[in-house]
Amino acid sequence: MADAFFQPISGMELPRFAGIPTFMRLPHVPEDHPRAGDVQIGLIGLPWDGGVSNRPGPRHGPRQLRDASTMIRAQHAVTGLRPFEVANCADLGDVGPNPVDNPDTLARFERAFAALKARGVRPLIAGGDHLCTLPVLRGIAKDAPLGLVHFDSHTDLFPAYFGGKTLTHGNPFRAAVDEGLLDPKRMIQIGIRGTMYDSIDRDFAEEHGIRIVTIEEFFDRGVRDVMAEARSIVGDKPAYMSYDIDFIDPSVAPGTGTPEWGGPNAYQAMQVVRECAGLNIVAADLVEVSPPFDPSGGTAWLGASLMFEMLCVMAAAL
Ligand code: MN
Ligand code: MN
Image 1 (tube, rainbow, N blue to C red):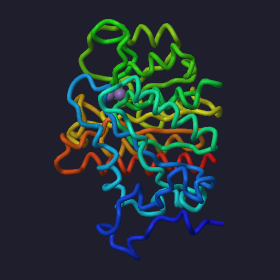
Image 2 (cartoon, rainbow, N blue to C red):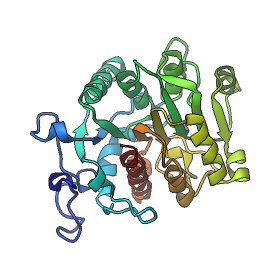
Image 3 (cartoon, helix red, strand yellow):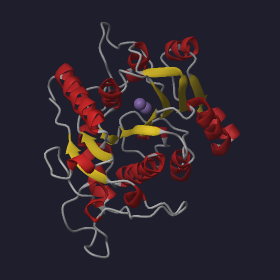
Image 4 (cartoon, protein in one colour):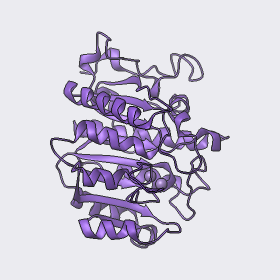
């Protein structure tokens, strides 16, 4: 049943430090490749951080995540799932941004994801900053709004910064709700913490029925209880998973632009994704990994491990 072409290179055949580092050592299958039509889950990079409002760097995320992901093996340790045998997975490469023109980049990303949707490919994205999520949703969710499981220390529901209508990594989900790309009644945001400008983002959530689980509630109730609620809110209709690496405590994942203390440890960070099993996740992203703030490479390694957890949920949902 497993398609030999789509199997990753095993560390028992070629050492993990050797070869060209594609995501999880999968084949590189650009759109003009003869096997492009057989890809079911496409791992794809968005090397862009034009939405960052503070410390830049996530444009370097996809390359660092690819390198770290060469340490991923083929079988999930807890579930036993071998995702590369149940789904044809490939590294699709990056969508090229225009680093000096945000509207042009947003349009390029939207076109690329609309084309993937037309081909029936489910994307697993490595960012990039969190504004990357908006053009992805514009590309795949215009005909039917998606549910959302969102891990982050921030709601990203703020109005435009600096006046005007500026899009940043602080407002992709507000824009997505306003544009009808997400169903706010099927949205849950988990891990929210840190000092606040004011309550304007929380007010938007309350007004639209978006469920926010603060980090205090998360730790009071525990992972399993919170994630059971997440599954019931999102339901079994198509949904998106968006994972901002700053969800995790900065003692564990310091390589990000807007860290907030008092977050989950690495085990809990992976467990929350595992607990999404059964959801119909049609697309997912891991964003805000910033290699300039990650000298040990540990944040990228945790990010790559999270991408494997996400891939397992997506493969099981096919
Ligand atoms: Mn964040
Ligand atoms: Mn975010």
